Amino acid sequence: MKITITGSLGHISKPLTMELVQKGHAVTVISRKPEKQKDIEALGAKAAIGTMEDPDFLAATFRGADVVYLMEAMGAGSFFDQNFDIMAAHTKIASNYAQAIRQSGVKRVVHLSSIGAHTDKGNGILAFHYNVENILKQLPNDVAIKFMRPVGFYYNMLAFIQTIKAQGAIVQNYGGDEKEPWVSPLDIAAAIAGEIEKPFNGREVHYIASDEASPNEVAKILGEAIGKPDLKWSVIPDGQSLNGMIAAGFNPQVAEGLVEMNASRRGGVLYEDYYHNKPVLGKIKLKDFAKEFAAAFNQ
Image (cartoon, rainbow, N blue to C red; front, side, top):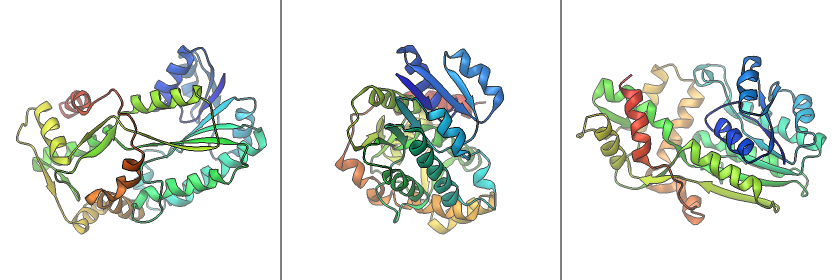
């Protein structure tokens, strides 16, 4: 098949490209950076250099593809840009994707969404995924879409390193003994590659998870990996968490969205739809990621 991939060579798009090329598919990878062309071609894929902000470029790149994989990617510094509007930015990209799909005639789409995309209320920053899904759902009915909803990424735990080093604990506005799902980008890529090769039928939702562990279990496993077996997970009030993020330079809209998202983890509100549609867990477990965490911690 001819498959077009967005997301350049990121955490998910790179292993996804590698797997699809290995399976014999003709893969085109979209990247905004010309210097990525050599790396993309080294994987056996074709590079298309352009941006998600250009619907005509997207349409030309999508044209002729059997399947298009869509994701919205913001630059690493966006969360610290005081003028950044996360909802508007994602709405614009989703609208560009929808326009490009209409222009190109693509009929099969796989979209990287997220846990929390089932609602626009009480889920904080994740509400933009709900908005994006609904923009794509307005495409004609003959465009089949698989919405892939991964849970929290393991690598987001790397943000814990700062408070572990400064305060000797993981510090968040949620915690406790209630299990939560986590996922590896490699398991996400494998799930997407699998769905690309399966039949498409209307609009489908697929959750993706690798392991389930409570915050206190996370602290224990990560603590043992870094030589701090007594590492604790400390819970602070929402307001304290918000003030800390803003003091660190976060965009206020982003900070408020992250605090509300984490608050929705308490009592499992964020995961209600996940547990109604629970997937088979992937291969890469928290103890596997703990080795990566320890390597980053000890750098």
